[in-house]
Image (cartoon, rainbow, N blue to C red; front, side, top):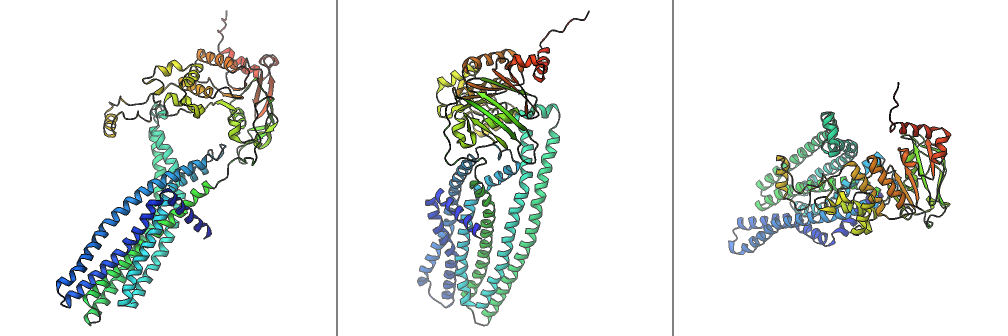
Length: 618
């Protein structure tokens, strides 16, 4: 109960902060709307009774005038309230999304984002954050409005027949209890459906994503993915169907109960009128009151159900907002000095969870300041995991990573990362302009065009970007068209007819994107530690040579970590670490490792053999 009350306070507080002026008008208008039906019923009763008593029409004109004003209010107020509600919803959605995504930025590591359960929770939080605060406010305002109307009509009924009043109110109790149970059931089913809906969206994206389009068509797997998508939708539909059928049975029973009460009350009123116990105005008032109470009870139940269901879902939003960081952050973090000694991995063990196997098993590695270190090994050996630990996206399960002798756990992650530049193997292709794709490497300086172009030159992609239709301002996207290129209707028509040539973003080849990602990393400037995770894997040999020559001259004297499968790129490294099965199996210079004849020498020989001319056999 306490948590539910806290949820109400949080939802109402968020809605009020988002749109205080709108809700300050919205609530009184709801009260006015609640009074209107009762006032109309009483005015009709008074007019009918006066007419049947023979009262002249002229003295009744003021009652007719008031009834007309009440009618105008009844017509205008709902329209105004709907406008205010929609506008308030927009503002609440804006604020709630800002808070939600601001909260996700507190997760300084990657573990939450690589957890499917968290992805389900995040999806629920996204849905509930947009609608729940407004729904809670609207729900409780609706409950209050219904209570005001019920109070007015109950008072009216009590004057006419106290027994019928009790019966009508008692008939509403099962409806309230049933809707409360239904709200809980709907929320539980929504959570149950979340994984299926996420998988459905995944398969739907595969059917329309440009990156998957080639394989989908070449391998003919569109039908396979479509069946998977439809199966997930069928699973979600089955869960919804069970709730709908249960709700149909419950709602049908409640409607039958309401009909019996209303019909019985009407019969009783007509009998009383035939005996002279009620006037015609009383009967009209009785009919309006019974209908009004039942309608208001239905509104109350619906509003309560909406608020209750939204509160259940809103708890996931609040839980995410209140979540601690996925990595511990020191209360008084140590300063991150300019790297002078080096970075050390000391007896580092790591696995992604207790259910996963060990990725690293006692790794010891020193990366001296100002030197170039290469880390090589087979796929899955743990090279990219070491990169994640160096950036403190994860903490070691055992052991420690030290920056000039200070444990990374004692530093603020943002301060540490400000000292690091990186080009990742799984780099991003942002649906932004070419300049923005480079500039986000140091977002505060993204508008420094000369610096953007210099980074692109260093990465060997300047000429490519300059030749684009709008140069560096060209949108690099197949998802979004250029702004203002065409109306929505003409764009849709052009797409359907295959004539969509204008306003479409441009995309790059894999190698060009990789150079652009390198430019993004270089745009950060000379950082203390430069991490290059397969920076040339998508390049041709000539481009690869140019990139490494550029890095060699640009980053001379910088502490560098190079992850590469191409051992030719590691020849100039000061020190090479070979990772096998989560441990350092060999280390030394390129020459010493080749001379040792171990794993590194064998891998290097295999790669070199591919570039040698075959020997003629006589």
